[in-house]
Amino acid sequence: MTTLVNPLDERAEASGVPAPRLERLEGSTLALLDISKPGGSHFLDRMAELLVSRYGVARIVRETKPTYTKPAPPALVGKLGFVDGVIEALAD
Image 1 (cartoon, helix red, strand yellow):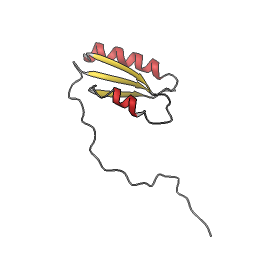
Image 2 (cartoon, rainbow, N blue to C red):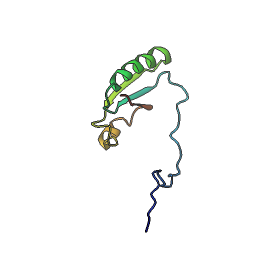
Image 3 (cartoon, one colour):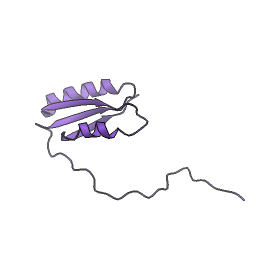
Image 4 (cartoon, rainbow, N blue to C red):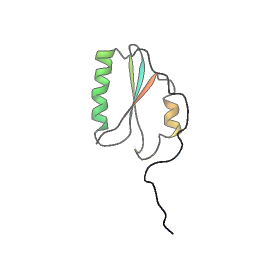
């Protein structure tokens, strides 16, 4: 008997509604989430500068996931409940 295995993910996509998008960044509070990969903090440092200087973001909140291999812990997600949006950094 031969078993063929498809290397593609064949799970059905969950249907849902995308998160709402911000109409404008000016005056907003954004979280920059570092997923703990090398170089991510450097990228987010520059991103924070540009968001404030070019787009008028009022407040930047920085958080870091304990590891990039797992989703953010519920406690960390809860800490970001007050922000208008989250930018997650991935680097290497």
